[in-house]
Length: 118
Image: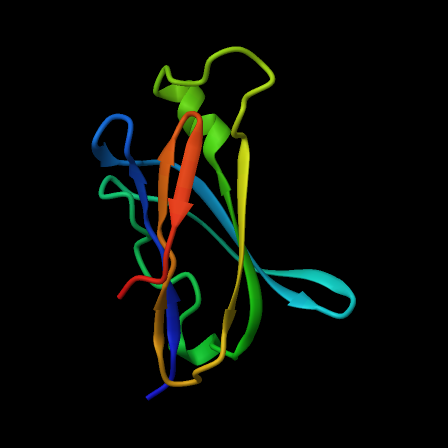
């Protein structure tokens, strides 16, 4: 079995999934960031398929960037410009070639958290 990566976004201020958030996944290399995927969250705050499916999975260091500002503006939570949170980067490592990694974002206009989920 090969590993894979999934993600989702929950709006903790409103208590619901965050629909329509653009997410970019990049691999961290010696030369910098190499973008390998881009997607948007669905009405359940999830992506329609793994953002890094098994056939593309490699161990290493990665970065997810969640474009939260557009979502916060659209949902009326943005506040004044410049936004406190606009783009939320999460850099993490994946070392087990057979594991399912899940990296969710719990988002509010003035804070966020993440964890390794299942």
